[in-house]
Length: 104
Image (cartoon, rainbow, N blue to C red; front, side, top):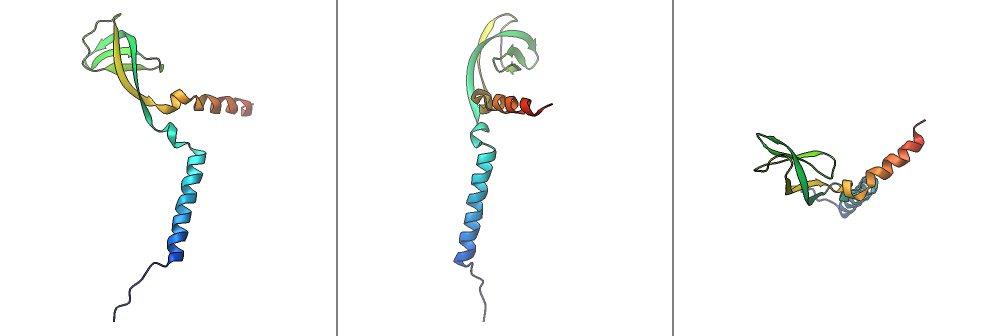
């Protein structure tokens, strides 16, 4: 005679409750919407040419290499790239502003 182990409803509901509680706590502490990348299309001036493509200075504040670019330095090109959503939300600026009060 074989004995089968069956998960009791109490165990199932307790596990489900713990998982839901953990998800709620994590999304409260670290907002998930800031992890999602956002597609951005912008026009910028080419500042250099490399073997990988044109280097442009984006509005994000970092240089971006655009592959397959045939422009010369000083020309404006339109390009598309992905950047973190947290940049547009100003979330990190609020965090740093609050942290400035703590630093002696």
